[in-house]
Image 1: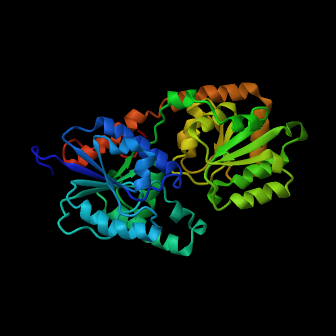
Image 2: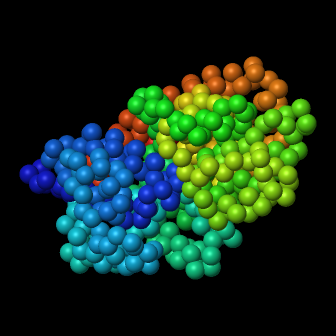
Length: 397
């Protein structure tokens, strides 16, 4: 508990967040904290523990009410980061009233004298547990210990979806009252929307119909299903291309080889990570967002697409139906024939596309970023003993 005359400090552990590497978790975290910054009382300190390059990427985290605390070193390997979290972070955060570990794990060692400290952890998903075959033996063994430790020792567990919260309850047999769902929110950045896309991108794609998939090339994202579906489209739809954008990943070279082997090299575009204005242009001009991922803790690109008026076709897996509801076409995961049929139906039906755009925009308005940040701020107040318990633990925001 915090006395009324104290100025409590909330520590935000972002040491895990490497810009451009962790995908949707990065956007979720930064958007939430940006909103929390606007809600924080002048009597509360928000201390951010992070890498130097994160502060360079997001300078808003260096402005009041945030107090940036830069972790030592610039080129930091994962083992070094883990060691720093368990030594340096434990030391510098020992006086914080609350520490929120936003990357899914908490340190095994708590600094002596920090027994008063309340602790929250954000667990984005249980993919290392549910899809363990996609991870190295070392990583799945390590996370197989860290995740249940975090669930057990945190005072509250924050999740981006009801799906993830329910998986944690089922897997670790903890009471639902320990879970808090804080969903993603989407705010349309008018400056980004008005910015001109890269001329090379426009020259390459403006005369083509294309399907869009913005995701790092990881195995569970199942980019390969879309290449297979593209190859099965009827000849009359041979003008449809496939655009992948997102940081290159372990599957990138396999995808190039797959496209080449299928004779689709000219129709499969691997753009890598693109600027926000280019991504907005892609959403605006795509025939649809096609999102075949087999595992998502939320699925932020689906929300972005709906907000920006791009029809959504997605897998019926994990958190995606929770996000999309009836505002998109849901396809069985890994069923290439079903994906092919869904693409053909959408390409042949402008009325269906227009209806999906309408329903998607309506659905996107229910994901209010201000409400999400307000919910997280209420959780912090609850941990500080300054507010009532956040109700509806497993209810969407």
